[in-house]
Length: 577
Image (cartoon, rainbow, N blue to C red):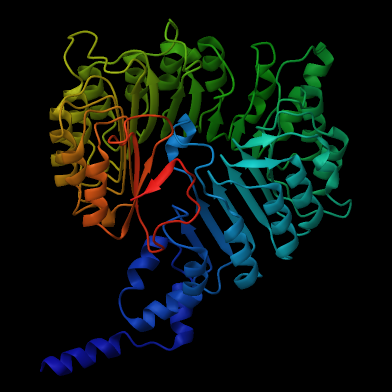
């Protein structure tokens, strides 16, 4: 009987290869593909041969050689490098994550590569030139928070990628040697659909940009840098009224009344714009020009525009469909009240500090603004909120109003600040978040927190995948609670906490299912890290020692699972145990 059941089970999984391949092409999620590849050897091979897209969330979790051997027919690669804390200068500049070895492997095994998305990778001009020469069908390049290249590398992409449809460079450390790289696109080049160079600082060759935009009739996304004036933007809009996403340059220029009418008319012609960003130096005088283009906006990014509350209020009255909003805290609580009054469809809110290094700032937002948004935006499920003060009661009310949060990232700017009304720890605030928001996937905690907050997290946050902790906790027990609970935790980021070796070693049954653990300025020792490495040989346990600190202490520790073993390109400041 058992044998017959096994035979039936085997037959039920047997499909012709062509059928399997066709079915697998409809699986777009990497997680789904990873799951079905474990069913049996036939499905494993079907996934292996049919997978055209891969996403590597840590470039040292696998080697280029292992990747190309496992998946021989890939055409689209997403590759992430340095830990997120490199954004805060906590990772040495020479840490690693150079993309070149990956490109060499791809050139040999993936000659038909079409798309490459890189995040926090080191990308040299040589690598960009190699990319441009090696892949004749290459179409899409996205560089986010990468460094190591100059505009010379951009010239190579523009010159030789003749089928390019996407050229997206965001938040990168680019050395601008000249603004002439746009002129390297051939006069016959017409395929571009996405062009984003908003964070470049140099002047650009506007004549070359204007010609390029005029040729690319399928251009849907255009985000220019601050050097592009309002008058020049107006010329681009005349050429590309079909844009869906627009990032303006500087939005401050002396305009006559007649010029303003012309600018307003250009925005009126842009009926399809759904995403608007830039608006650098925007003033109340010129904002009305964009109102005609706001009717269909779903995303408004004002994170580079120090807009006040009155200007934001006027603007939001013209954005009835807004779902995502990024602003600076210059809008104040009054500006966030306008959000609550005008944006009933809002799903995502990010409020960034206008000056994160000014400890004496008196402007900003408080719990009042957050409360106002929660009352008016019941669909809100993603928030990143930098504020000056917060209370337990406010957070409890906010999550009652918006119980579907999947991402709740609250940053009280002053470390270890308690509830400013009661002087109590903020434990009950985050307890309310994890008890109420059962869909929560990502959580960032701040303020004065004891181990009680982490007891709440471990007990209630059953869908939590990413947890960021700073200046919190009162003992090792806090981290132990998270490790004992939180069955789906994948990424844990900790800095400036009291957690020590006992906390680190409490995660032995979790680390192999996690992507990574970062701990810096905690109470870790080298002996504790060595013990972890001994007990978990399939993990890379890296210790970063940049100064003359005590050799027995481990100031920065990065732990991640890997099938490639210890990396071979570690700088002297990084020790793999």
